[in-house]
Length: 227
Ligand code: CA
Image (cartoon, rainbow, N blue to C red; front, side, top):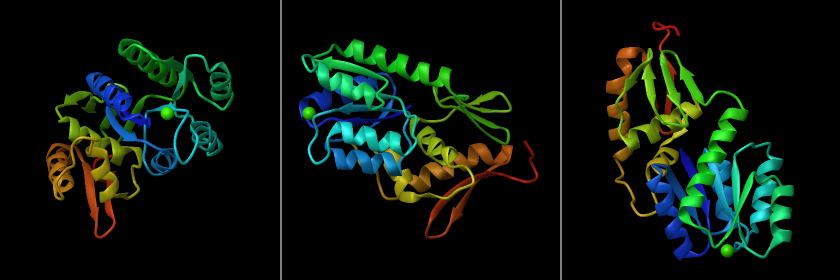
C-alpha cells in the first residue's frame, strides 16, 4: 500500500505519516498542491490523503485535475470541521470520503482501511499477475505458483513499482523515490541492491528484471516460462 499524503501543516503531516506507517503503508509526503499534482502524474499510488487548503494549488484543483485524467484513485479529503461547503465541494469533485479536522488517528486509520477495501472490492482484482508471479496490492504479499515469497518492505516497493508498469521501463529515479520516505533518503546504489535481491528470488521462476541502459528497468516473464 502506497499513499500520497498532501498536507502543508508540518505537525499534522508528521502525525499522519506516523499513523500511516503504523498501518504498514509506505507514504510520500508533499506540502503543496503543485507537488501533489506532479507526484500523482508521475508515480503510482493506492490512495490519496488530501488537505484542501494548500499553497500553490488548491486541494480541490488537485482533485479535479486527477479525476479529469480519468483516475479512480481512492481519495480522502481533510477539512475543517465547520467547513460544510468545502466537504460538499470535495465530494462533488470526486473525493471518496472526508475526515473533519481535528480527528483521532484511529479514525483516520479505520477510514483509510475502509476506503482501500471498498476500492478493491468495487473494481478489478487487487492482484497484479505476471507469468507465475502474483502480487496482492492490498496485503503486499508476493506469490510464485501460489507459494508465498519472503521479501523485505523495500523489495516489495521496488517490485510493486515495476509490476504496475510491467513490460514498460521504470526509471531508476522512480524506483529510488518508491523506496525513499520523508525521513530517510537512500543511497545511490540502493535500487541496484534491491534489484539484485529481487532477481535472485524471482529469476528461478522465470520472472526477469531487465536493465535498460540509461533508462531504467523493466520486469517481464521469460518466453521459456509461459504463464
Ligand atoms: Ca492546510
